[in-house]
Image 1: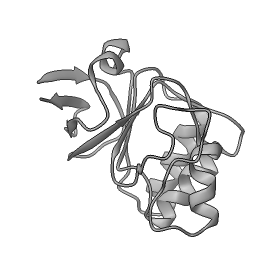
Image 2 (image 1 turned 60 degrees about the vertical axis):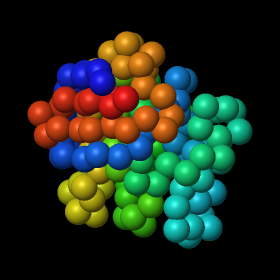
Image 3 (image 1 turned 45 degrees about the vertical axis):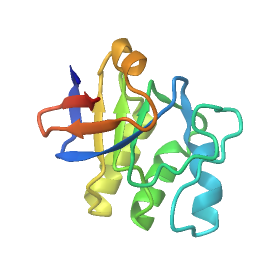
Length: 147
């Protein structure tokens, strides 16, 4: 078990499975197909991200350095939250980017989403956590990677 402390942007307590991308996550390429199909879960459609391609990220902790891609990123995050097919948590090793932050804030305010966002968890966080690990998140920004 290893513990990390980050900055809380949208807090909450949660425990569940991690899905890890060691590269920036393109929000449009990741979520678009599932959102357009009105799917019941998000299966990552970004073929350029071999870490998470074709994985189900609904109700999981998406562990990533940052989001990348077009200016639609925030809207895409808000949309999947409105649909209820979003990751339960976005756990950033770096500073959250403005597009992801805006989507998460809008989802919390307008969609009453409980999506969690914590950033600045550090480079060691992404070196430690693996897809399939159990993650525990505390309201104060503590993230525990369980063995």
